[in-house]
Length: 446
Image 1 (cartoon, rainbow, N blue to C red):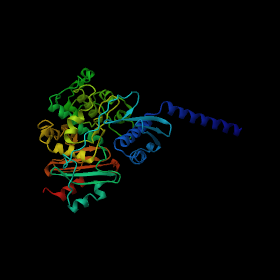
Image 2: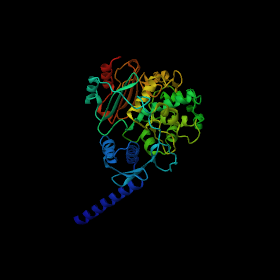
Image 3: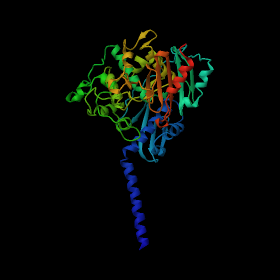
Image 4: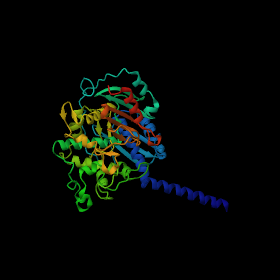
């Protein structure tokens, strides 16, 4: 009798395992699909855009700092097709990310990507940074001491660039990274989006007061009709949004489960009256990308380069797109640390470069103004006024900030820009503000 019961129990267990495997194969849970799509995307961009080793990226960028499920992800790289496939437990939730020259990597779900690409940018001309790529580093030994202090650099740091009076005076790179390594800025990309909108305001093609009903006609049917470009930049649109990471939320669903990210984000209902609540949202910044792209000739994906990156000499900069060829203006720009520094210096100079006005007169002043609904924490140009962990800081400082420890600090009263890039999860409690304060104390105002 016992043997018969045991036989039935074993058989039932086997059937349960087969059924579970079949379920995971046919309809994997969204959490698994988020994990594999995230893995495929990070590996693809770092292999084909940044030139890094796939196994190293999987282990150090995906698995070491991430969700426990990510340790069960494996990837395969197709060098000829320039694509990466990721699977969970070797079989489940397959995900594919495809590289296109000049546009980086895009996760592909149910669409076929267009054949759009961009040519290689012209090389950086000879000459001193920022107009060339030659630097004359300071001989101040105190600077070397600061950039050798692990507690100031933070765990997982990859690059630091220090700009004073418009010149790079110090920089440091971790093993495996150098001046030519493009690094992901995550939400620092949001400030790039604000800059691109500024170029179209300068040309007369956009205005901060524009509503968005021409781009999203269904918004005209409800309170979303009142949302303007300025409300979106201020993260005060009132649209419902969940920016939580580590699970299936609005932001992870948009970034890793949708071909057309804007279709998803723009479809969110209004949760609050416009301009009454601050709600940080990557959906907002990606929606804005569709808005500014709508001012261009259809299919023109060269605008970030021609309007902003080429004039500033940011030849490494690549903003990646979704499956609908909309730039992911919330999250996906890669650039070298020196090029991130160029953008910081550009904002410090008021939107003028080589004597040419690229952003409207007064636009960067407006970008640096506090958003009323944010209690002074956020600035209108998709930047932060609070220190990266809410610390007290210099009064006129603004920050570009990104996930996992990316930052560009702009210190107008000291004529300085400090870039710090790396892979430093927020649970480690790192802030680049002590690094910036140590550098400012070392350099002074001379």
